[in-house]
Length: 503
Image (cartoon, rainbow, N blue to C red):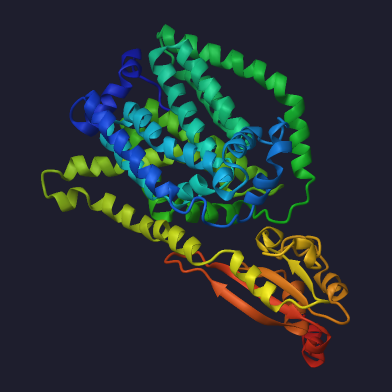
């Protein structure tokens, strides 16, 4: 973080950035009209299929456990509480479980634009908001019955209100920033890293960049005192939760290297490169804003990368960082527009068009993939093929919800673990599950990620593929469902021996 020459730069940082990027000060109409358009487009794009598509993955935890988790402060209760409220209005349904995510995700885009305009100007914030609209990651969380759209909205408020409080020397704005960050953490505990990053930034600002500005000294001092009190208050619970997380024994963690590639894929590689270059540019143009953005991105990323070496960490745990990355990407593109506006319109918007084009396949694939395939199709296949005496092992969520007959009609086996979990003894488990006078139907996800080797070998030896279908997507993601059937008559003894000999 660079030291500031004087306090005036800090006071005028927002206006300086607006002038650099927009060439003029934006009036109320220039801000409100785009915000309303963004709200409308976000609402339309995020409501499509909201109640039509089947639950998938962790949405089942939200759908069926909202009541108990809404009452547990250690279980990210806020989204579950909102789901409970929508259940009372709409009844239990896919639409009701997802409606809070839709509402939060839709609101987050114009809110981002309104606040981002005060940091890097109207053009940069508008470009960044368009990128958010096209983001497959943001779109997914705006339609999933999970809590990350709430994290995005309140992290955006927390980040930008903190910076606003600092530049204005406003304690009320500081309190508003703290409140927003606390709400974000109630949606998901990993969002506490927003407050941690702001505390690190406040400490460095207090030591190196406060100068003779009493407003900055007042806000940073108040922030640090509040942070110390909060840290003392939550330390016991934080310690307990960390130990519990470490001892979970989950198998889906990937480690820091794989996490890096997952983040790039989820956020979009082209957009991520643009964001990082934009971050460097902001650091050079305005060390104060740049220092804030570097701290805001760097602290959570470093913490999560370190934790991923010891515990399962998914890219979604860094979703609270993405508002800053969207902003820096929008900044760089708006810089190019300003720089090349005298040449030609195509040249000026070339970078924006490249980034938007790179994001389109994932955006379109979200709809084509979910419209063309969901778990109800393999469930319907098993229903048609099921005979008395058969058993069903569903390694995808949803069989008991989407069967047309009473679930107790089927001999549905308990969930043994994810099909990628190599710690499960799949050979023994599945061999014991095959009925002597019937068949075992096994529902599995279809992904690029390979199944656990012992599971795959058992399927090759003891079962045959009965049904498989992949969703229609235009991006890198490959997903679908497959159904295997196993029975005594399907065992290939020679293949079993060959697999045993070759491992």
